[in-house]
Structures are given as C-alpha cells and as structure tokens.
Length: 250
Image 1 (tube, rainbow, N blue to C red):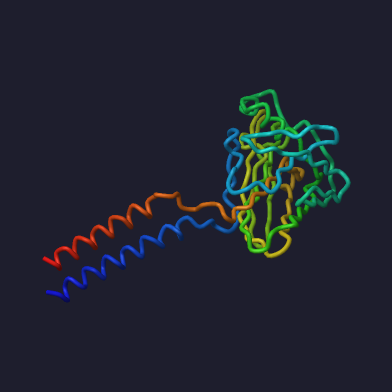
Image 2 (image 1 turned 180 degrees about the vertical axis):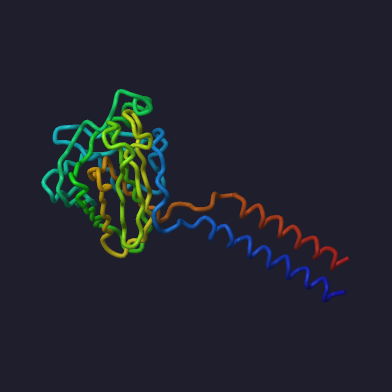
C-alpha cells in the first residue's frame, strides 16, 4: 500500500515538472521568416519587445510617420549606399512617393499608414538590393519587419523575394492586382551573431521595392504571462499532491 501511494506522489511531481517546462517551449519564438501577411490596418505594425529602429523609406524633405504607436523616421535611400542607424541599404536605388492610391482598400487605411506605404525605393529591372543590419547585441533575439506595397496596379500581383541566408519569403506588392489593392508585410526572427544581411529582389517583370523597415529586440520580453496557465496547472498538481499526502497520513 505504501509503495502504491509513493508511486502516486511521483506521478504528481513528474506532472508538475512537465507543466512548468512545457509552456516555455511552446512560447519560444520561431527562428526564420513568417509567411507573408496581407496589409489590413494599423495593428499590422508589431509592438513586440523593444523598438530598436523603425525607418520610413522616403524622398528627401518628407517627414516620418507614427503608426500603432511606432514612429518611423525618414530614411532617404538614393545614393546606392545609404546608412541610417542599424540599417545600411545598397543597390541601384531611386526614391518614389506615388505607391499609394485614392481607391479602396488602400484609401481605407489610416492616413498615417497610407503615408508609410506611399513612399519607398525603386530598383528597376528586378535589381538586387542588400540590407545590412548592424550594431546588434550579440546573443539577443531580434524581430525584423518589412513592408512591400504598390497600390498603382501597374504590375498586377508582382512582388519581391526577401532572403536571409538559406531562408526566403515572397511578399506581394498588391494582393488584388488592380489599382487600390494593398501589399503585404513579413517578419523575420533571428538571434544576433554579427551583422544580419537580407537581400531583396523583385519578380522578373517588376521592380524591386521596399516601403519601410522595423527592428525590435525581443530579448527580455515576457513569454509567459504572470499567473497564466502554467501557474494554474502547477497549483492543481500541488493540490493533488497534498490530497495524497493526507490519505497517506490517515
């Protein structure tokens, strides 16, 4: 009888230990690109972790914009080798401020989001652009977000391919293929071990463009809410343990 009760105690303790560590693995950030997401509204802008830099690629003299509480400072990229904080952009660059539209669904976005998505760079003949992200804290986990949008309807559903090492994602500039359509954004999660290098290349019949970048440091951000499911399940396990101890003492 004592052996059977002892086995019950061991089972409860094992279950409690499993429940403590299981949510940590489930909440870990995946490393790599997310699937491209359609642009829908201000909530597209990630607020995870701590903001390292947000850049609005725009012609000289234009102002930045704040969307979902994130301020995107102007990044004038026109010389072929342009540096702004963490970001260095290389390639055959030309700036353009007409990627927006008076038609929906683009016109339904907030004015601040429209400002962000209306300006960007342009590399003709699907030339390759290279973004180097430097000044990173080694070992920290970062999240990078990029927006591609061309609501003119000129190139249909053409997009660009963003590549980081062996990983890549295809991001559309206009999901509808007609004027007023909106593009997509994608998120990259990586652990800094030096500079991070990302290349962009447009589809064969379109140009290469990006409208905005955002870099966020996820290290130190909470992954399990205080008093969340882990603590509740652990409490249930401990209650079970106390129950079996009382029965043993009876």
